[in-house]
Image 1 (cartoon, rainbow, N blue to C red):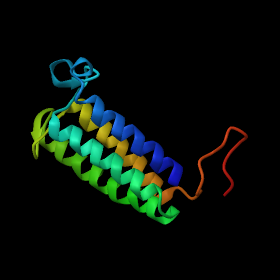
Image 2: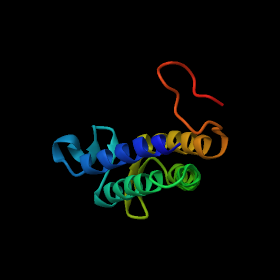
Image 3: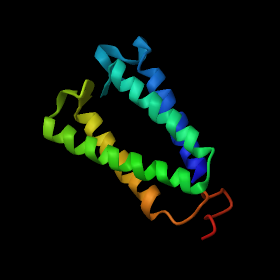
Length: 130
């Protein structure tokens, strides 16, 4: 669980930093698909820092990260779909691609936080022990 939180933290940091690189965000769309602005990028960076910080604690703390962030992303997903396909949500630029990505994050994070029973990621030698 801790390793997974570290991976998620690094991915969020990279996404947040990438959002500030104009060449990666033509017309305000990260990789040409996901709406971003300064606030959106800061949220990603803070999410990454939080994931990394909690990953250096106990397994239970890392699991708590996924539970909290999973619930937050579920709420953001619902608000995003209710608000529609494009525009702003609490100062954060969002579009339909973001809504579907947030849905995927919510499902994965909730699964990791509440349903995943293994404390370790699978290795190349086979599945993780139960």
